[in-house]
Image (cartoon, rainbow, N blue to C red):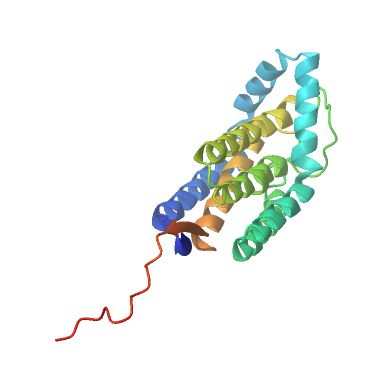
Length: 233
């Protein structure tokens, strides 16, 4: 048996439309946030979440927010290196570019919206500075951990392992968003906006900026022709 390479098919237009949809939803949410139409909902959600506070929950969310914040850059480097050594150098470059672009976009959005963080509503249990909307932890959790896991999982032959990795990444993204609200660092709409912005960046980067990775599949070798086997006519 030998191998040949082929490109895994992907529905690029659908992913591009999904990126546009996430961007539109983010724009709508941002308009409501700027107009201060979400204040009552944000307050109710914070108080509701904090009403169930437990020491074990606090410890878990502190560990999660440490991972999504302090370990984000090391994780991005690890994903890029993994993609490179698994034969997707172009994907590694585009992944790194998408992560950098998402970080820059988040800084621009924070400066533009200039929303203060929650103060005096629930205990601030983790360090947080600067403006609040959109949440950088939530946005980069999608791009760094979500997109990184998805791209690496495409290089894994086992569908069970691939799907399990994606499910774990999705759960981590949700928990990272909840952690920022629970720990008093963000309004709920901050993390929702960050998640939507991250999904827009991740789907756009995957659909438009890079082609699908090539996958090695085994095919049967064609036996060599025997001497004198050519037909004569």
